[in-house]
Image 1 (cartoon, rainbow, N blue to C red):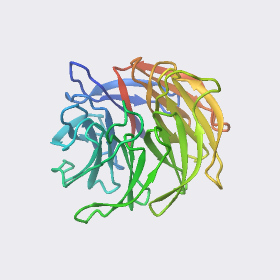
Image 2: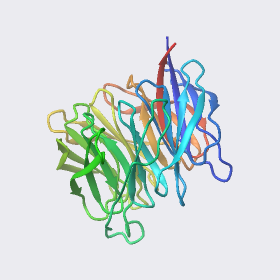
Image 3: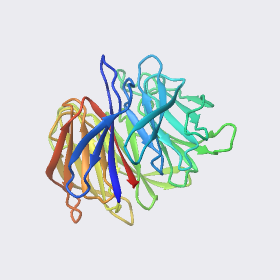
Image 4: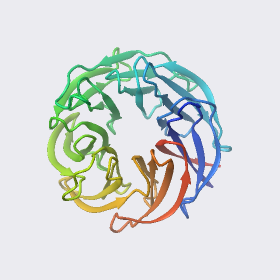
Length: 353
């Protein structure tokens, strides 16, 4: 029998708390709280290995950050701390893991760098073996006076690591060699519109296209992907006609069947925007703009059945579960919600008892 867990990371304020854990009912979309990890300050982003045995989290701090490794029990859902390591950068905001669970990759927002920390045979993190500092800036003097690495994403074939740098308006492509010294070497870089601020990355289901949400301009960018190189295909806005409020694009996810794309916009919009994906070109067509039922939808996740989209509303301190119409891709009714302090990351873990 399969048990589905939802892990919730977030910002903990003055009183550090742990990663929250919920049972997720894949039939109803309901969530039941079942515990949390031991104390960790600002576990703002998480990743889980493919066998759901280990959970890795960044502890995001302005002056230095750490990464934590936990073992995960399929029977009880318990998270047990293995160890923690300094990541060598400031304000770590994203962590990714290769399929073999031998390397973690971390985006350090404030210091504009990315770190590589290998994983030992017991699931623990070792020290930083590579630290890459970006250089440059862009036109937004308040947000882009220096590099701000916001996302690191392994290509599905794990030959490349893509890196979105909000501060330089670039997407970097690094060749990845798990046995190499160094593990990452710069292969190419793609400049996007000045002032747009690329933030998060998603691949299409067939791995032919890459989608990027921009934080500062509120766009979704579409690229053809070929052996680590990006070729621009389309830029489509997330904004409603006449919208003149604050823009803050956040997260982006494709549906499991590859037919639809979901992007979140914070600021004054507080919406999830839904697009259909043209299967032969990767181009997007707007379908729906749905209120997130809260404020600041920082992160969203779709369960593997494609029936539900879960949205983490950071500033309203809640997570909402939306039913997905799988024929149209649109978000329909809210089926459940829970109060969670400043949620910023949602990850599923599927276990068989």
